[in-house]
Image (cartoon, rainbow, N blue to C red; front, side, top):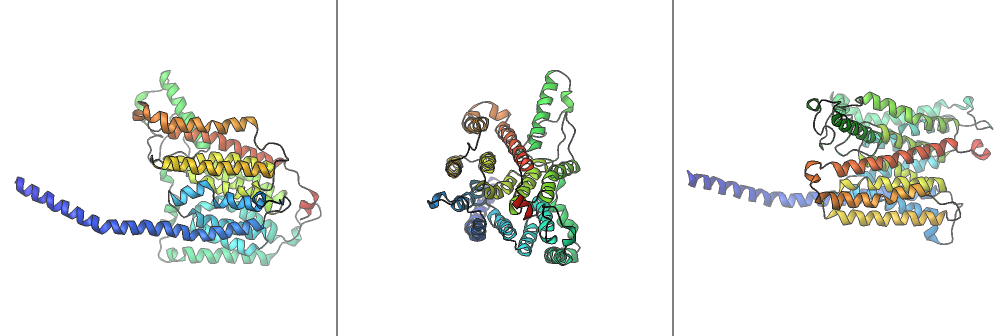
Length: 454
């Protein structure tokens, strides 16, 4: 019997070795295909960046090419740290998708409205996360393309409504939707597509909490739970262990605070984007107003959306780059949001060999961002105040604690989620501050007579 067992084990080992010989070459070929396909599709992103640079206002022209707004913008977009690690290390095709988005933004800035609408419709059917910014596109196209002229005071001239323009936009949307969803409708599988696009059973937050309002909400609930247990206000037997910090993608119940439903997040998101939509309609500023609304829609959806991924912060960071080279106030918000948002992506790269890579890459990008934008606006007030500077500096000891000190403590075995929790909550405070600061900036911005006329 022992001999038979050894024979079975040897046969199994030979089988595994044979499979390895077959699968390893295929695995390597798959990795090469993935890597080179990401690099190849980045060609569209590079072209989109070129078109966006052509839309930048050239009032701040400098003698040195390295200080020109267009050059700075190109570097901020092409060498964006977050996009680099998400696509080329974590591996995804976001560069291609962001290329479509930036190209559609460029076309709208160039008043090529139908091209911009077509590109965004295609983008939306590639990845539905871009529905976050769909309100900005819809309102801007309605305000600037479907209504062809304004009154002298900047108010809307209702008689200028063009039925032809609305029809053309409708045809574009219907055509793209038919090509994308038509086969699923014919096969009766549309409900399967929708159920996978909106998987509400995955829970309010991802395994690693994205740094948004719900991360703060979860942290407060966790703190109240601990306080309640210490003071004997709560029954320990009725509280699930690690309900929100177990690292699993699942639905969970809050212990003290009210549980959050998908409908509640939808209502919060809708309310949070309304002021930006009203500004775009009643305080039109052309492409600049559209970009402001787009960034605010992306940030508001990130703040209050259901099961938001940490990578979604790039949806606000990249278009904000276009505003950062045009006005000092926007540059300060960009530096704040970019540094926090990129730092919040660190948990995506969690292996020891990746630690020096992500730190070095982020340092290079952050140093360039601060130096180039400070040089561009050197004649104006500092881009960050002292409180914002102190907040960003505190990211350094936070990273040292999470990556070096905490793994050496006995807490790692019993509370492995603590570094992720600290990173998420600390970054959530910064993202919330940047979102509020951008909103205040947009709502209080004065519009010139020339902008009203345009």
